[in-house]
Image (cartoon, rainbow, N blue to C red):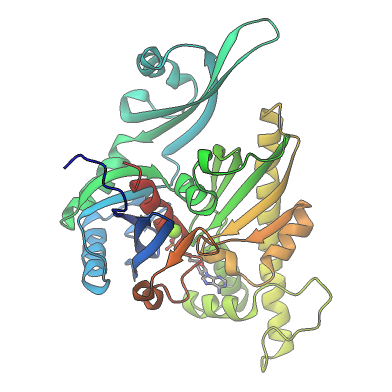
Amino acid sequence: MGSLSIGSSQTSIGLDIGTGHVRVAQVKSTGSGFVLTGYGSVTVPMGAVADGEIVDTGAVSAAIKDLWRHSKVRGKNVSVGVSNQRVIVRLIDLPFMERGELQSAIQYQAQDYIPMAVEDSILDFQIIGDYMTSADEHMMEVLLVAAHREMIANAVSAVEGAGLKLDQIDVSSFAVVRALMGESDQILPDDEGQATAIIHISSGLTNITVVERGVPRFNRISSLAGSTFTQAIANVLNVGFDEADDLKRRIGLPDISGGAEDAAPGMDPEYVAVVHESIEREANKFIAEVRRSLDYYLTQTSQVRSIQRIFLTGSGSQLRNLAAYLEKGLQAQVLVADPFDGRVQISSGAQQALGADKMGAVTAVGLALGGLRS
Ligand SMILES: Nc1ncnc2c1ncn2[C@@H]1O[C@H](COP(=O)(O)OP(=O)(O)OP(=O)(O)O)[C@@H](O)[C@H]1O
Ligand SMILES: [Mg+2]
């Protein structure tokens, strides 16, 4: 034990607890890359997870147990992601100090940057780099993460209640960055003055992240997400949520590229038009929200002048023609992205379990990849 054995492989499990689903991904590191060796997804009872936070730990534990019974994932140590209003990510500038000094200084400095009481928070930080100001002051850039203790405790008890052990807690959006772009030292630096945005759309939450040179530098959570589109259809047609969700998937947004494809063959065109209109209204709000976030980011940073590439991911990003709408509305290249397009191979055993959930799997995969390092 403890020796370096060349050619050995290591596996890691990522667990993504969402509003509608709990997903698990098991990933193996081989000499030549990463392989998804196990996958699973189960639904979570309505209300057990709300706004990204676990409300009913018992119900979530039961869903996780169910997931272990029905997937081929084996092992008890998991990495879990958190994403909600009580996880705060801030890039801050501080006078330069050594790592050890920063460890204690951050306890006092953090309160200026986070809206929660420091006593109620678990703090973590990452030193991004240091620089000299024009006035010759030595400064450093630090990525500060603060998570509410009680929120973390709920995640721990949901996981332990399922008989598992929590190895690592990660910010979900960082896991998504890792799944799509890799760690900072593994990727090529972006062109000078440019950054990449990642928009991850789930059912209840959208995560907007800006990445520069592989480092997530900005993160904002919006409640405009998959459910927003579904609810708009439910309201305008006065139908139930499940029926509206089905209509959303079948109809989506109109084709703005000028193509005359028939989005919903066999459906009453007037009905389709009503659905189109209701989703389009929400899509425009969504675009405005993303634009506000990206503009805010650009005003906060001196180096980056534009965001020219946007990765769209998460289950909700499959809304028909959404990428084209974003591309037009944000004047940037929008690419629908999943981790299996190059970074992670899928073993034949996991293929069937993954099925059509490639876009939904990104968080769980990124969490598993994060666990491989430790
Ligand atoms: N083909 C599709 N077209 C449009 N929307 C889709 C499609 N497939 C799934 N969605 C939407 O994706 C959303 C579900 O996303 P996902 O499963 O990632 O959510 P979750 O992880 O359970 O929740 P959370 O928001 O807490 O992360 C739903 O709003 C669903 O309607
Ligand atoms: Mg999710």
